[in-house]
Image (cartoon, rainbow, N blue to C red; front, side, top):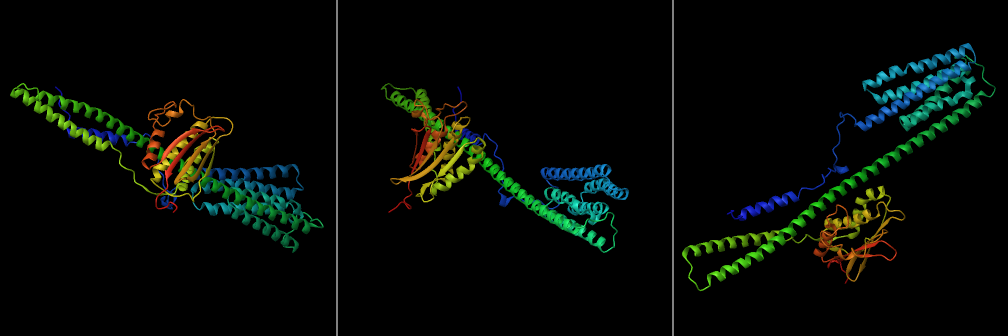
Length: 480
């Protein structure tokens, strides 16, 4: 004969089952709010993404420098003005190419990277000025446009501030060379044109305009990229929070099922034990004398049944769901938070979510977290219905007050609920989804019922379905 189950064993079984049910099926990602995120110390190496971006910018910078120097060399060899001018330009271009080697070695040291970048930029301007002097200085005023290469690539590869600095330095460098030539300090390698100063002034104006526009565009590009990165971070955090809430819902569903199963089983066992008590009572009152051994066995059976009844009463008390905590809730805030959590997934699938829930709606007494679970479940069902459908794909959440109650309606533009399914949508374990458990809407309806509300569903005349959530207005906020 198997040993009877003790009350302590039953308690341990329930405790272990509840602990197992608390383990979420989805690993919850750790979400650190921006305000509490730890700040990396200054000596920590940059992240792999930042390092890769820096390497990419350096590759672009070297590619521009090598390409420009190579084109100048080819142009000089094909269209050299004279031997002296060609030699100066050739030497300048060769120096520009050769400098890439010490540039690269200096970068590999990892020291003073920002000063190195400024030094490379200023040297590029200086070499360009040297090349222009070799081409004639003031006599090469029509070629000042070659300066534009440095500010433009500097603006997008380095910074807008560096672009402005390169533009100013290029302007001052050329003006200095031209003034030194005009004063006789530097010789003219090529005789200047009659209107060389006018040409130089115009080209320098164009250089400064291009440099300023490049700085503005680069700054706007960086600001836009930072905004996109911040938006993507917000979407990622909302997605992580959605996963966390989904894990909470799954855990609550398992606890709900466990409590329902335990309550049902113990109720049936209690009925059977009550029948056993009745038969014990009848066996002792048959009118026939019972032996001492039989009486002893009947006493043991009665004691065992009473112990089992105590365990069952305790189990039923444990299986009863406690009344949820209530507080005054602004439904507009709950809906807004739900919309933020679902925005990433809905936007990814091309579904429009419209929210029209005024903040002036009366308050309700409920748990904001549980109401958010209900809305996430209802909006999530609409999302699954619209995913993959063609045509208009919209979800609307609207709210209004009606006869002392607050009503939140969730509409979708899907195919609606089949008439054979509609009467069963809130039944536990009833589902038409492959892999579904049929508990989401049942749990949602139970949550609203615990707060004195209702959850109903119907099809719309214009197509799609409507889920209607109603909750009584909190007494303290109800209109007089």
